[in-house]
Length: 120
Image (cartoon, rainbow, N blue to C red; front, side, top):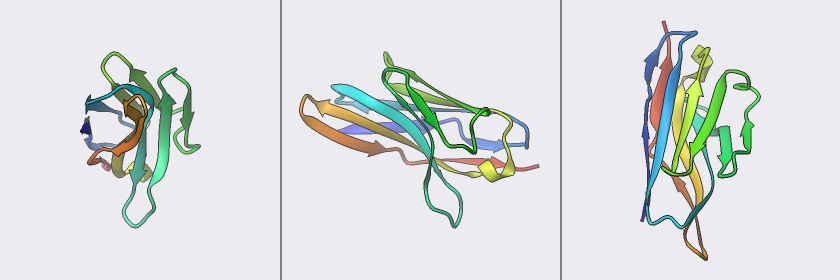
């Protein structure tokens, strides 16, 4: 059983910063990639940022230059540093992991979501 536990969401004013964390726990043989998706009210879930265990990252155009994703392979933890936040960043942010619980067992896992609200 693999679980993703997120933390760091909350209420922040426009222009402010937040840091999200997501730790993977359980039976983990290796991790291909971890990332963050978000879903705003009435909209589809979208990719925010994703990073491979080797450190290669991709970002949504809407967050480039403002958000930074990083991974700590020793802790199976991914971080999302969010700066210059805008009201349109308001959403539930979901952690995602592409991993192997065993040598031949591939799994995609989602966290429960953490709410980020950007408002004055």
